[in-house]
Image (cartoon, rainbow, N blue to C red; front, top):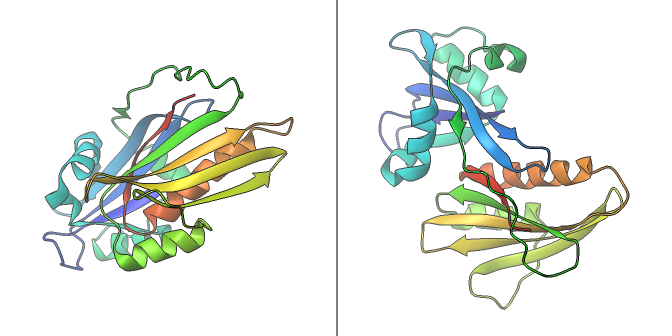
Length: 216
């Protein structure tokens, strides 16, 4: 699960609300939706969060008040907000009231004939210098000559071959991690684990994951 603290104003470290989210994934690990719940201390209750989930990805001013945090940090904030002990994740799932559905389409046939799958993990927000350096290290990126590609890396896991790159989309608009997977005979769960790892690595640098798409 992903946890976010919502502050009353940008730059204010004191949280005013807590948002809990979980991506709903298809069998091929693309995103079909986002489940979630928001803790509102003024009413002392959990509420539906689909509109808030949409807004923090679309509204840059609101996004400036949002901080991705770990479960441990969320638990401490939840106690400060008067909620007591943060429920375990199984309990949090029972609080999800409304799913934010994401567009899903069949993968495009790009005519490569290679049998490779191509994914894009899309993020809203901007990476600062420290976040960019941390993402480069965590994703083990090597520099490229492309002006919008920060770096590229490859690895083998579970009998599969993976290549990925961190890419800018526009100026201060969005970022993405593009992943090419050449699947072998091993369990396809290795692909899911890699996509999850890369999504969390970039999220930890302050960006908000928007979706996981598949292009081929």
